[in-house]
Image (cartoon, rainbow, N blue to C red):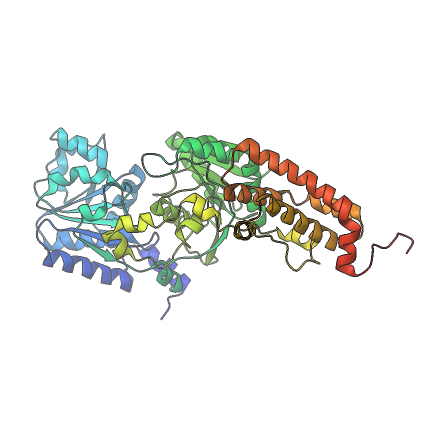
Length: 521
């Protein structure tokens, strides 16, 4: 039986009521600890929005009630510390936040502590905190590897890691090195079906990413991302995508680099849209004011850099724009998850992908085999397509407004890669590919025109398609320097116009069975 959204919202406000799947998860977790040895390391996976904090807060409450030991919860961000502490308080758990300014003289009065990993590490090295009676350690966002350096302090404690994506942030430190077992929670699809999460409508815009470089952390570098995403054509593509799919909706834009986000802010501000920029250099006061504005403004646009991927909850977000590419499955899920919260008038949200992430990872909520990923992370990572292979499957899709101008043509596309394969098999030179492409472009221009001047006008509107075909052609012949591609693009346009001028009458008669009509006819 499905719960109604209204029931979900009302029950969530209670803070203590648990859903059936949450109770089941708690039972499975305690059962695993009871059967495991004293220093058992358990990992629990649950999608963003499924209530991980609720679940481990109830685990803390029950553990303290039935054991004479203490609990420590570790997070990697100060916002998560505060949120966790507040949730524990709602569950009746007296807890203390261990931050850089906390006075630990009263630590004996608490059974539960919440700490940021770096702060805790400093306190332990200074011997300022007594952890001898900690029996349970809970790690939020456990896929971050910064926590593992503290495991040596808790050799006689149960460790519970919780995450939405049990795939390590460092490919050299797989999670199965530090955890004995993975328990998989409800799937995203199940949470959507039962109206705990909103469904994502994804719109992917193909982007050439082969200029991006991969850094030591396994993801695209900020510099190479900034070089690509601050270009005017990418900013234009972003604006086009927003106006096609997100205009008037509360929108959150994720970027890979502060400079990119500032360019995005300038573009939207210049266009007259309500927009603000947020990154980790903002003061607490500035951040609070910006998030308050974002919450209160129905059609607000907030462009940001990484800071809002965790510890941020704004259910009124109706559109997520991934204005970046990532090789991190975890980051992909975190960014999209920011739009998945349900409201009484919200059951779906939009995702605009400008980084080929959809093609790389599949749809958000796909039925991933988390157990296999946990056991064999390299197998999963090695089977993710690289950008060149991924882009080889792209095809150009003419925008609806332009497609209407070519409505007389049943088909407007041309398979450059297929034409290249055929030419190789037949022993032809590669230049015949562009000749055939030009002829096909001229054909559809003529098919949708009354005279040569109309056809030439339509040819001018095929810029994006021409550039796409040239890029695909340059990949086929393995010659894609910037100067060469630019020359090909210009040469193609000149030859297309020349072809139409020379062959319009002949092509027109081939299509219609008669030559073009004179004006007085």
